[in-house]
Length: 294
Image 1 (cartoon, rainbow, N blue to C red):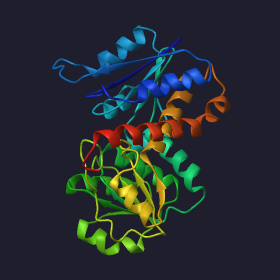
Image 2 (cartoon, rainbow, N blue to C red; image 1 turned 90 degrees about the vertical axis):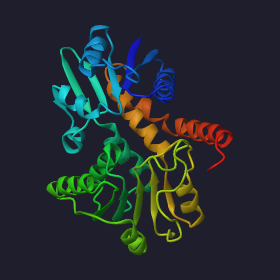
Image 3 (tube, one colour; image 1 turned 180 degrees about the vertical axis):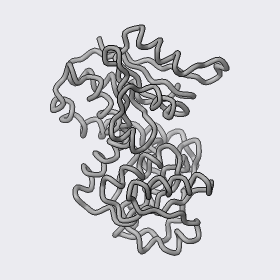
Image 4 (cartoon, rainbow, N blue to C red; image 1 turned 30 degrees about the vertical axis):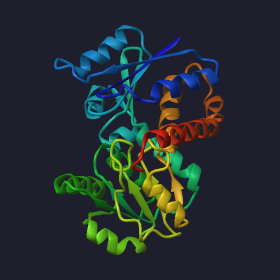
């Protein structure tokens, strides 16, 4: 049995246990996947939690808010994605070493190429400069983005991300909501990396009147699978890249790392589309019953 975990805060509703167990079942590998939730624990210590998993024989752990930066610092070896983004969401325990990866970064690249192929990213509006926004922005650099226009309520966070992107030779600038609306038609991509649109944060991160068929639109939110932003983009003929795809590809990338010594990567990859269909339908169905403001 391969023992895995997720460490984070407020993760009781995470779909990750189901995804990894489901993946294990498809490739004939029994998976135990546990949640280590820091919510309400005033004395929670991230490094101690990681060491506890290592001592208990876990193969590795996924990491989510608010511990991704700490996870990066615990690693003995970091992937290129971790070095670029500065955070880690996957820790692999390899003998006495801890290997860190950022599969939000690699997963977005995989999802983009799967859905859009070699289509140039062009100039992209990035909404939200938090952890996911930073990972996606760095991934866009790998995809040859022409320029990233960062729209973020916190001007300091926006400036820091733009500075870091420019140091990686990725052209970037901060834009206001008004400027983004005025210039949206000249850009090619719209990327939402805020919680706006989630079942618990209903709404749309930008006005959608200026969405056009030449746009490609990504929403990191995957509950619901079709957010207001994606529904509006579909109505305008834009190309869609959903949060479900990121969820699947980042999970598959993590599982591939965890199971590398037991399962051939090609045996994992053949199940990606069936997983996408399963979760897309599941999340559309569940949230349509739960939300009235969608």
